[in-house]
Image (cartoon, rainbow, N blue to C red):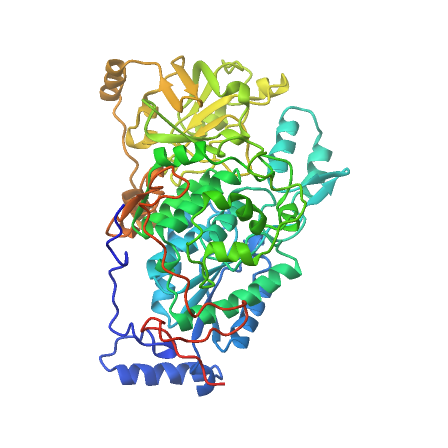
Length: 629
Ligand code: FES
């Protein structure tokens, strides 16, 4: 693998060498006047010259009344500011778009790229020497990492943290695996309206993100595996003292990064992405995360090779015993030592020389975390909860660009299966007919849902978790093979094939599946096969050509013109790095010698989060001198 391009970014602002308040001035044709004017305005808010002389740490504030997953953002911002001030910086928080799963129509994925553009451009537009990204709910961490990757300055992620679990009639419950479990029981007539109303009050016991290994928890773990959080930044629940301490440490670390010039391209390296892929597989993480990771990697000039990722999966067991693949919740993971416990077990499979936001390597951070202790949540490598990675990649004539299945959350009895297709043309068709007593469906059939891909819905909604038809649910059926070009929530479970690429809406083979066609799924062979010959498929394609969705104006027009397929991360084509550096993972080897080595641990690494880094002569030229006390 070659890595000849020092940076994926083209933009070189004329004042790139400027720091703090002098950075990124508006263009009036007179830089002195621009700075004079800026200082005049900010002094209107009561700032002194001493404050304005410090490194500026931007804090992306994603608090929103519509986003209870970020309900602790005000407390986090207060703690980040404390950390920044203690380390000699000036904190400046600024608002960005905030996206919550249940308050984003048509789907949160539709606005992820918009949030990433907001994040990138506000980092670029406003003077800041480093940025703290406060995110947590499913799409916010990916959007922020995508935007920050493109903006290119020092950046550090601060996760809002998981919600606490609740209890319903002495049963521990948490969003949202249990949401689906109880709703499925209600649909099947196993529980009544009173009980479903009662459990509705208990599923989300506090602010914070979903409490299982859904997309939010997965992206929190991935952010730490990428080296983008302080050590231990992934697992503390939202309402704990540990989470607040992480916030303070994050603020202090951001100042150290601003001073040492630790830009995001030194952290988001090929090796960091390979570590993140390992972790995704080993935690039985959300299928959505592979889309997000692809999008983040694309911003740095890396493509994700799904077949190589699958080979990596065959060598990476699931170690984390969390719902929906296992039994526990995020707060249990935190009590078990969080990511340090997992990374310690995964050590033989990781690139230990990948640099993190602390200026130390991942291997150094694992050592600093100390020895492990007895716990029940993270299994040792030799005793995994599932022998392969949580996600398998399927190929075949139904998905020439690939499809995925979360095998660790699927029914083993259905992973080798051939059945008759029962087809729904789109989400509306599904809603109209899925509960009809007249629906011609049996447990042996395969449900196929079209037109919920990136352009189809649009936004690739999490409708891939097709409900069990009511007549089958009432008969006690708990799982059935389901196939779509959409996504599903990371909290969901079942034998569900997702991300079929190319999607139906752009004329992929999925568009031409008909009721009664036979489909064969073999997870063992990684095959998804439509048992219809090529001539017949070509005949159907020419008789019924697909009209690709378009829009007349606005964001929807931009989205439909620019969104890429699942294997490209569902990012906008114009937001990817202009140069492709490599395809990842580079090979399935534990340690890939072809992978470019990570930069060495920075001399300015903080001995402990919260302490000021000493500047050394090895710091890059753009590094900021320490503030005079
Ligand atoms: Fe926000 Fe689940 S809805 S993390």
